[in-house]
Length: 168
Image 1 (tube, rainbow, N blue to C red):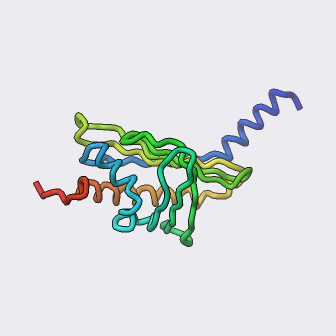
Image 2 (cartoon, rainbow, N blue to C red):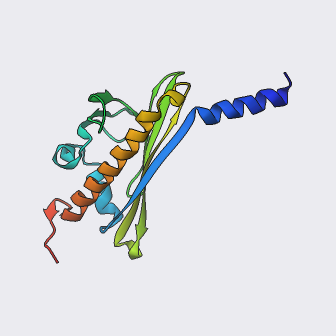
């Protein structure tokens, strides 16, 4: 087999073994308020439908622990490594089973409405040999991200720096 054939085959295999899902939500609060809720692990049990407990420090290179309750399937504990912490802009984590699977999860915060609001993108890129077998898991994760985003929006829009917002 020629080198070109091997490269082409490797590219097709890489494409089959990679899936990305993402979802967005617009939140009627500045990015700093969204970031404060997103990174307040102690507050997660009060609002987060999937992550009932989170422990650790958001420091690049360190691991954090999440106790997940996905929309479908049993509860699980994951320990992703923190990749990027850019306050009020980006949070990126990666978990893996070396050689078999990895998932890179991210939140990107983008100011809208002259900084009064925030466009939040949450997503994950799954890579590895078992990804073609994880169709249901990937589809379910999208549902979980949508539920998480809706809960994040409710929380941020009702709580700002520890105080309840007064209705307009």
